[in-house]
Image 1: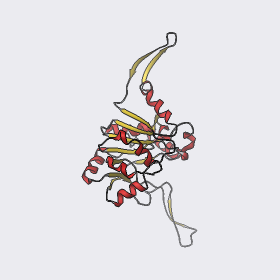
Image 2 (image 1 turned 30 degrees about the vertical axis):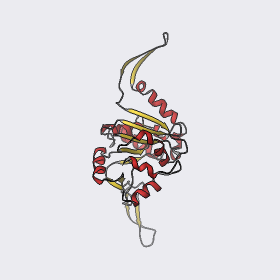
Image 3 (image 1 turned 90 degrees about the vertical axis):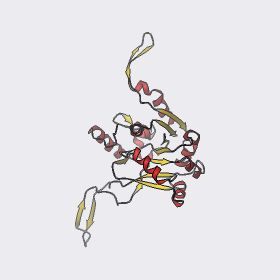
Image 4 (image 1 turned 45 degrees about the vertical axis):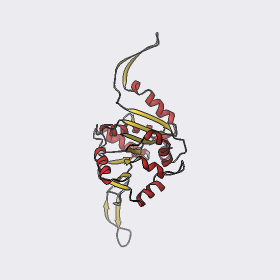
Length: 257
């Protein structure tokens, strides 16, 4: 099975990092967030990836072109222009990097990789969020639903403390620090799709989260796999630092490998 990963956005809300590299290449624990996402899939037996590149896509291409070198111990003999690899490890991944355009919308990027997807069920996700979602259970759920698309629904935690004001609006009646959000389920990515969903995408201007998902829902072809465990996007520098702290603690919930 293949996993398609969106990796072409500008990442304007984390511009401190993305001025020099695409958002999926922002590092957590010394590895790009894209690497972490691929490791999640790989832990569940999915080792073939299609990466939809766009903004600064050459950075992603160069990373994988030199991946074995990144993961190895080497000696460079400058006198004889020689490189000796002492030990190295690389995952059993097959990675297809596709330039899907710098300004193409999310749906358009998926449509552009149609020929690489093939005719089988595939996974699809964003290149900036990690989760402890069980991919195998997600796939089994999708098969049981018999719909063209399944998304992972999640309920994010609240970012701020919640307070209730008294009758005079000057005294706080109660305070709760960073409880769950408003209880609503949201799109957490980590989709499982049938190739027919690409027919719901018109062109490069199509936003996946709008017309395609709306039409799939209207035709009862969109299922929701409810995931109550860890899920965290990396939208801001604060999010990046939060993920970094979790990784450094040795208790990163998404590390299932």
